Image (cartoon, rainbow, N blue to C red; front, side, top):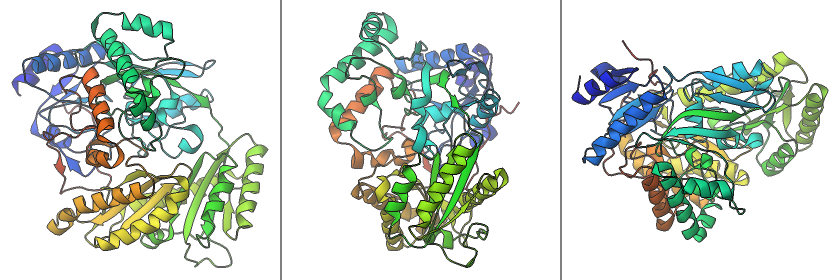
Length: 539
């Protein structure tokens, strides 16, 4: 055990491990990157987290930076859960739902709670947290840190919209509690001594001095960068919650959150649309949006042709062998007959445009079966390879204007041909989030050499279609190098100042959000789709 690990082990209630097996296990996450840490810490409580941060801060004061990377489930597809320093793993001891206020629709939770466990608990109260994640093991802390903008976002927005307050440990070990502040309350915060007052003073001044740059940022369609445009409104109200959300552990370590909840509607109606052509896809999308769906998922015909999934249950009865130009899966929720009525009206409006539909029509089993087909398609897109090539998430995430999604995917297939590879796609058609996997063999030098050129060309195409480099989750290590496509040097400079205000020594997750020459993450040649380590301490 290293000296650092030995020191922390004697000062924490939680476990500290530095054996080769655990370091290797935590060197990868859901992304194609790899970075081996020097140790893993499993803090038992907030006091442990504060001790870890303060110790790293003391080292940094002496010129020795110990990077701290907070890790939830390890499912990050952008390399945000790996790092070369210490992994601070939270699910082991930070998995408690403290309380639920059913009247105010609020829940106080720890960040290591899995979203699936949270939903099970909330639904016993007739409530839910309307935020989803790409992996069922994903944690609440991970969803907030990445500001998830997934399938449910078409109706409910991003994760930060459903967070009331966040408790975060700062780089020197102090605690900050976010929340909406009035002008008077902000003035009091700015008058505080210590790091909290300093953060509020410096950040408020930074915002006032850069109004024009921030106004430009507010118009950009992306989840990349820091959401500084959402911190202060026109009335002077101030809230750090949307800034911490989406910061990917680069500004502090989340140790607790108060979540906003929504009424849970168990009655789901599901429609599967078989697109006969893409000629009127914009009108199809417009019709769908009028019915305020919970989810709208799209898979293009080219991608469908490359996977082996049984579709007969949703294809037209008169021609079950048809090859669709695309499939759209729609989920609506409401109360009883109202949900069924909305679904039937929507299905008819789509059929009038010349497309076939399969509808659950009030049948719970049918709804589940239709949605399971979509889940099988998703699984095949991310798991099924082509000979020695596997679907690799090197260009997995982008955010397009909804009207550009289909056109972008068609253009991206042509781009893939130019790079002698293939892409498979799915998209959240209601929000414009596009997911792509490239068929590559990362053990093959030729394919590895394609990655950078393919990535650059892909995100240039995204920008050409008025899109953003990050959609469902923030940019992480994987896409931070594309930031110059999305942001001006002045905007990047503003992000640098935000980072400096919270973390002057660059302790938290360096190489994420802001590019770093010192980042040691490399391409993981042994990448396997869907494989990432659990976070239990191996004692």
